[in-house]
Amino acid sequence: MTICHVKIIPLWFYLKIYMRTQELIERPHTVDVPEEMQGSVYFQQGITYGSKKFYIESYGCQMNFSDSEIVASILVKEGFGSTADIFEADLVLINTCSVREKAEDTIRKRLEYYKQVKKTNKNMLVGVLGCMAERMKKALLEEEKLVDLVVGPDAYRDLPNLIAGTADGSRQINVLLSREETYADISPVRLDSNGISAFISIMRGCNNMCSFCVVPFTRGRERSRDAHSIVAEAKDLFEGGYREVTLLGQNVDSYLWKSIDGTEMVNFAQLLEMVALVSPLMRVRFSTSHPKDITDDVLYTIAKYENICKYIHLPVQSGSSRILELMNRTYDADWYREKVKRVYEIIPECAISSDIIAGFCTETEEEHQESVAMIDFAQYTMSYMFFYSERPGTPAAKKLKDDIPNEVKIRRLNEIIEKQREVSLISNKKDEGKIFKILIDGISKKSESQMKGRTTQNKVVVFDIHPNYKIGDYASVKITGSTTATLFGEIVQE
Image (cartoon, rainbow, N blue to C red):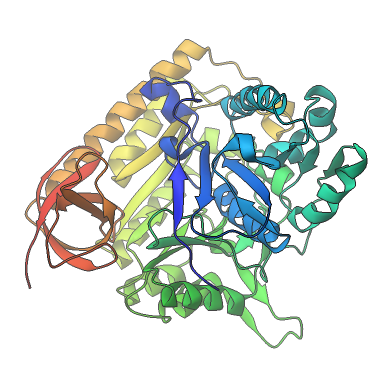
């Protein structure tokens, strides 16, 4: 596979600017993507495949962004080329998220914009992909009259047939969920901006029926991808110049692949080791973990290999055992605290991050304070924090009353945010004076005279450009200062 340079073009002029609190509360609780990446348009430079052009925007979690790479690969094989100019596109696709209400509202606004664009190009096809397509199905065709295609997460292989089916003016839909589809044989067209870090989808779907979550209904049951195809993709990426891969899944710890003939079985700890052995120069990350499934074997594997990053995203969702039971998280607060202790026992230098929901159904003030206290206990380096908003079709929507007033939710969320900022700052201050091995992955957003990278603990570090180092190199960086979100340093020669 040829690795291609790709440019990311954010749609700042289309997206409404939200207050910090609003940005935080609406982030997905699966695999997070920075707010500035939401609605990004991806354009593959320097390659022309044919006269047909596709334009694709992605929203939601990293699984959606990874799926856009799969869609791009399928379309490229059909003779399409990518474009960043919506007005020259023959096919406009929007890859959607249903986790938060705001995400769906954003999609509807974008569809209204597409309606105006289509007036200048009546032959342009418009398609809705992803979780919103699965959740709303025919409603998208009936309510949004300009939509020509509705395609669920497991139906991307059918895109060529669906596109062909619109030739007579009819609208096409395929939102069937699959128990087998993993897209293991499709080499994604990489939509990464730096050519250094890439995502590898290792499994699809989720078997955890958390009461607040729509993912099992939009992405179906868990199924794990062939382990050998994952390792082959990692090798291909390394040979193409990539130096970091992130293994993706709604719950990577439950990864379990069995060969058709029954002679092989690979769990997540074994897969981590297989990918780490591709090269000691390639860092390995993963997301997201479910606390109930992360095993000692996984922790010992992380500890064993220097190139497996010492960072675990371990969503707690609430610090209250009663609320955790209502959420159907299958563990209580004491059990979670023991899991955190075990992580630090086996990997002392590990960083842990989390997801926290404020104002879940019937949450009391005391239970909210238990969530605040959990941040202190676990010493999260960062968290994705948002207040609860009911999603149609989830168990919580059917059985529980969303009875916490919005003003209370926002106040509780702000208290959680402030506690996390306090803990993050303390954690970063402790890193001052230390030297970290940094993978340089780009130029700082704030200064062209500085580069940036991440520590093995997933902390962003900014430092002055050095003539002996370039993007993709490893460098030893001494930390000289910090904020709640960023470390600052200087390269030290070894």
